[in-house]
Image (cartoon, rainbow, N blue to C red; front, side, top):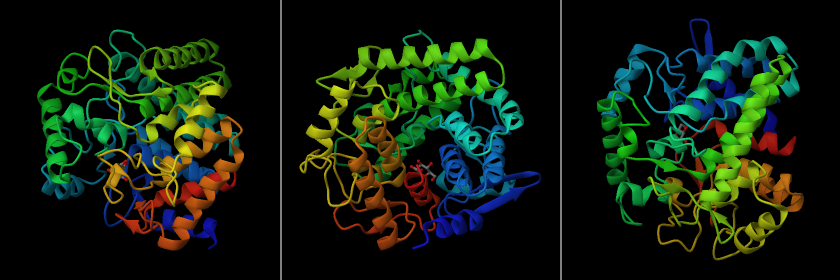
Length: 399
Ligand code: GLC
């Protein structure tokens, strides 16, 4: 397969325009709107194909930024789209957008584009939106300055029904997807009733400090710091870098136990001890020591009872009661996860394993096409078709 060509064709087919704005839908049939972290993935892929379009993709995300700095995880560019989505009864309480966010990959994606096309004007243009977005997360999602960022709905993690959130949703390890969806809808309602106040109202309903979200934040704050430096804003550069350090430290202090970083919930930082790929997310932000990284890889990633399935990498450890190889974020392989872990492994010099992860990802695309997620034992493709994220394999191959 000519990966570059196929990935590009899908991105071009999924490209949409609204007035002067341009963005890409993750899948025309299943996800015909704009999503936040998806667009960051698109920009990362486009950095290898057409950086100019990558810039447009990222800038379009900033158009509907909230006054408080939050960037919503979904944009309905046309009025008819919001109405169309109403069949799911999602009452976001906002016009033309959702009212929650998603993992903050924006600064990383902007920095990645800049690596391929050193256009300082682009950085200057996008910087104010980045500044306000990351400041929003640092302030509103960490009101007591414990240096961990909270999410108010599982969907903010990008892993809608991950078993990491079962406890907080008061669900058993095995339950049906509809029930899960219903609980998440209730949180959307609470958020609306809270007037979108995360730190003082929504935190009473759902307040999880998620490992991948925080690891992504750390790496993105470092990128933001480099961006600030590039546009001669040394003061901000120092500030964002220091914030990255503080979160990394807090992750050690509040999440790490027996060599594993666990997501936590509530005021007391109760650890959610469910083994998911989140254990490996800190590698992406170089948070573990070399020794700790080796432990995670040897003891867990390479363990056949846990994460070493036929096709790497299952989102949930195979020995968890919640593991379901066909359960959306409860077991299947997702290319985005492989991408995060690929870069994480590279950070620690586990190049061979990183390459295995890249070649498994490519095999999955060759075998089953650009699907949303894949069966970790059979490699069968599930969910959305013509799904853009497969293009991230290109970034693995070219990194
Ligand atoms: C699903 C995924 C989420 C993604 C969205 C659009 O909801 O769980 O991560 O952003 O689809 O692709």
